Image (cartoon, rainbow, N blue to C red):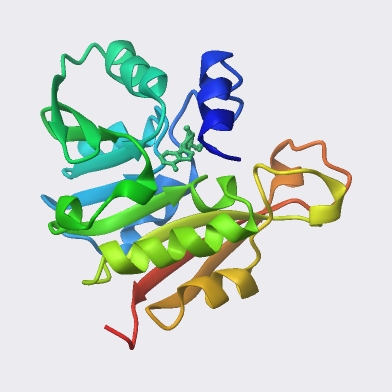
Amino acid sequence: MNQAYWRQRWQEHRIGFHRPDVHPRLPAFWDRLQVAQGGTVFVPLCGKSLDLLWLVEQGYRVRGVELSPIAVQEFFQEHHLHPQVDSVGAFQRWQAGPVEIFCGDFFDLTGAELKDITAVYDRAALIALPPELRRAYTEKLRDILPHRPPILLITLDYPQETRQGPPFAVPEAEVCALYQPSWAVQHLSSIDLREEGSTDTNRFEELVFALRRGVDS
Ligand SMILES: C[S@@+](CC[C@H](N)C(=O)[O-])C[C@H]1O[C@@H](n2cnc3c(N)ncnc32)[C@H](O)[C@@H]1O
């Protein structure tokens, strides 16, 4: 699951993770974070998700980070947006009004780019990564978000031995181990995806968490 893997997936258009609609858990649970309008929401590993535009419609600015220039270009093209492109550190920054996408490697973020972030939305970022990178990902979040903005986190849970990730299973115990004590973990919901059309024969659940500033901050 290195950079070459994701770049190739975008090149070959193998992007089954991309939804043609807003992820249903975003409008259902976003209010639980109680983020004031006008704030800036960080969306790590954002792909070309329509969730960015939903957040803008709710009155936020959004700042994504995405490795693939194909994803970034398609996002702006598909929504008829005309971005300005410049360089910020190791990133190419694409910006159109309230939407900014930093094109480059999440692990190159320094934190300087995220000082004004008021919340984080993670759908299919943590679960896109294998176990060793999940640890590195959350350690990086800890470094670059010292003010500990609240996070809406969506993961999947299923018997990992039944399929190869990504997406990987990240159960509640692992979420707690990765984020606490920097963030306090509240499990908001478990949704049985087999009741929503998934044909899986094994347990296949989506988990939604609200993470709030914890005791180490
Ligand atoms: C499973 S997709 C999810 C995309 C998006 N969150 C969504 O819901 O559609 C994971 C995305 O992370 C990107 N990615 C993977 N590793 C990355 C890294 N180190 N830095 C930035 N983006 C990365 C991939 O290119 C891919 O678009």
